Amino acid sequence: MIKINENYQKLQASYLFSNIAKRVNAFQQANPDKPLIKLGIGDVTRALPDACVKAFHLAVDEMAQDVTFRGYGPEQGYDFLREAIARHDFQARGARVEADEVFVSDGAKCDSGNFQEIFSTDIIVAIPDPVYPVYVDTNVMAGRSGAWNAEQGRYEGLVYLDGNRDNGFIPDLPDRPVDLIYLCFPNNPAGSTATREQLKLWVDYARANKSLILFDAAYEAFVQDENLPRSIYEVEGAREVAIEFRSFSKTAGFTGTRCAFTVVPKECMAYTEVGEPVSVHALWNRRHTTKFNSVSYPVQRAAEAVYSAEGQAQVKELVGYYLSNAKYIREKMEALGYDCIGGVNSPYIWIDSKCDSWEFFDRLLNEAAVVCTPGAGFGKCGEGYIRISAFNSFDKVVEAMERIGRIL
Ligand code: PLP
Image (cartoon, rainbow, N blue to C red; front, side, top):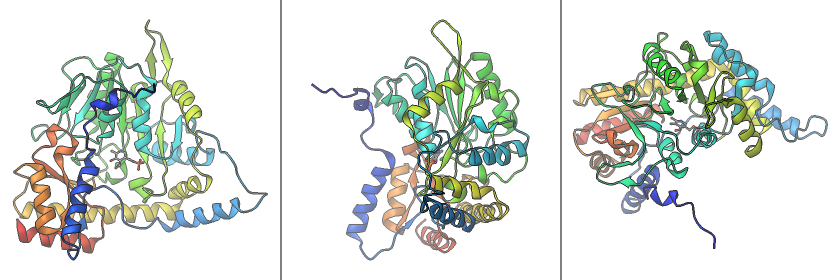
């Protein structure tokens, strides 16, 4: 008899975005003439930068000729991309990352979801609340949690790092030893950003406790304040205890093109039962080369073009466009009397809904035909908040805010 992985039975039935999709579909069926404005899911709306499109086309043409055709590439990614990433994203900012520490992949979702599998199932995992739901669900699937506690609204066995108004959605250090720590800055959903000093506390904690930090920097390109770090490797000591996930999805409009990468410094260690250190880089390399066969050559060439002078200017414009949407949304919501976090150095505006977050979601959907994301979907601490995303055209953002202004 084929048996299931029982851990899947613990998962809460409805993943956030499928629940939203259900409500949105029901609304559309009931109101076929009311055009919806979607400011919910964090998907980009603008075209790929021209430099990426050109490089993409050229690489497809190479694939069309026997002499320039490429088959399987190196599982870790082509050197041309790994080198461009290490040079531009890290070394240029004074952070030491070598090209062979960069593992190119088809998404930060897969990497941030998969990375936990190289660690023991009996480790203690600390996860911020609210946060991108992938970290919790993948650890539940792997058996690192107990059952869902409906009263608490949380899984047993996980250590939740609470974000709230008092700490500005930058969680405090845990009050007990933990082994694996997820951090996400700029934060999805709360739009909060951590300073170097705040990240240093985590790095020092991890060094003192032989823990490892999985730092999700999928939104680093939105950090405009030069005083804020864009990488955890801008913090001293981080190379010993931190893995960083990055993505071209939001930076360069690659959500449908798929390219991302994970940095695994050679200094990072995890430990055997008897406390002997094992290289995390070697473990991830083993896992990656066994289960992944690289990103397509044209996509890697398109990603490389992000780092050309033309690409850099276009990406800057793209990110700037979404950031001005974010500023507009935040200003309008504040003018309506709502407290906001984010929308600065982040494409997400996190809004105190002053009521149940699904109730506020339903109100925006049914009365204004605007889709946002209810904070409760990101964890218990997200209750009482909604997330509005700046990923849409400026015209749609203006119209959405007009509609919201009429009903609130
Ligand atoms: N990490 C965070 C925090 C995200 O919000 C998202 C997407 O919304 C991802 C990772 C996924 O990135 P990718 O498109 O590279 O899979």
